[in-house]
Image (cartoon, rainbow, N blue to C red; front, top):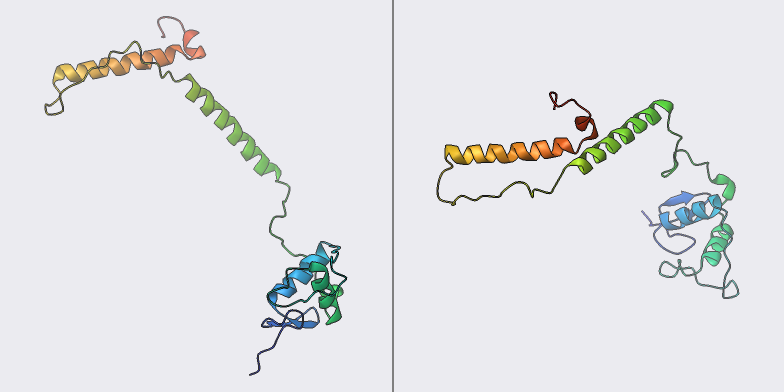
Length: 166
């Protein structure tokens, strides 16, 4: 089996693409250039070498060579399912997103209501090598209860409750 050579850049060809024997690189370059209607300009009088190692140096000469060896722009099909195309979200999706946004805002409000100021709580330490006593557990519960009450006081809804309900 004879290995085919790309008629544009002399790299290893992968088949006949758009009417010319070419490699995947030149096939993709030609397709993108035509689809995006690129208008390349050569800086060196349209006489650049288009080889495997130099094919990216001048896009104008590369595209011209693609056309010269027989690539046809009308052989390029329309994009089917291009990556990056955005579809407009359906109504159901929009409702879900709105619900998520509302939930996130509520979570942020709750997070901001948490008091990180523990100034009213006395910190205490027990030695690392002894077990907690009933008194230690009581102090810990008291500390947690004080923090809970301080947090509840920061909620607007809590302060609107009657003293009995608080």
